[in-house]
Amino acid sequence: MNNSKYGFLLLLSIVFFSGCGGPLSYVHPTADLTYIKTVAIVPFENLTQQKGAEGKVINVVAAEVLRRGVFDVVEFGEVVKVLREEGFKNTGSISKRVAERAAKRLNVQAFIVGSVEEYGVSRTGGSSYPEVSASLKLIDAKSYTILWEASHSVKGTTVLDRLFGISKKSTSDLAKELVDEMFDTLFG
Image (tube, rainbow, N blue to C red; front, side):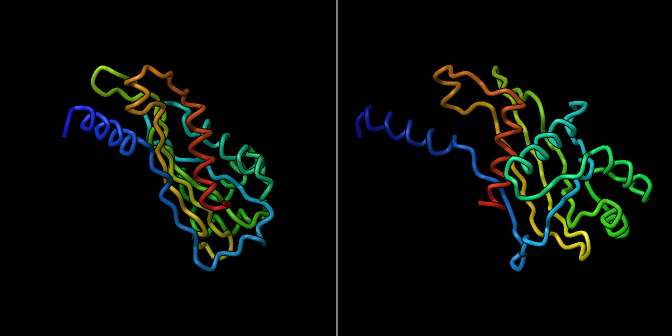
C-alpha cells in the first residue's frame, strides 16, 4: 500500500473509533408506560468532585421530561420535603417502603432516580475537555420494578476536534445532549 492509502485508512479509523457510543439502556420487556401521568425525581447521587453537579443534571432531566410532554414532574422542593418526612436517607436510590408512601402523597406513578459519575473538565496528556456521565432509572412506584435504565457518557471533544482545533462544548451543553440521548432510548 502506498502512503495515501495508509493515511486514508488511518483517518477512517480515527473517525470510526472516535465517535461516541450511544447510551447503554434497558427497557422492561412488558413495560407499558401509558399509566404514568406524573413522576417525581429523587435527589441524585453526586459521585463527582464537582459540587452541585447532581442539581445541574436533575434540572436538565426535569426540563427534558417536560419538553417531551410525556409525564408531568412534581416540583423538586416538594419531592425532597415528602421524601425526608417518609424517612428518605440515600441520594441516588429510594427504598420500596419510602417509594410506596411517598408516591401516594405526591400522587405519582413512578420515580426517576440517578447518579452523576462525571461532570467537569477531564485532562488527558496536554489537552482538556468537558465530560458528563450519568445513570438514570425509571422505577414503578407500586411494584418497585425498574421500567427503564440508562447509563451514558459524553465528551466535549473528539480526536478529530483536537486534531483540527474545533471548539469544545460546555458541560451544560453536554448534560443536555447526554440526557436527550438517554431519553431517546425510552421514548424513541
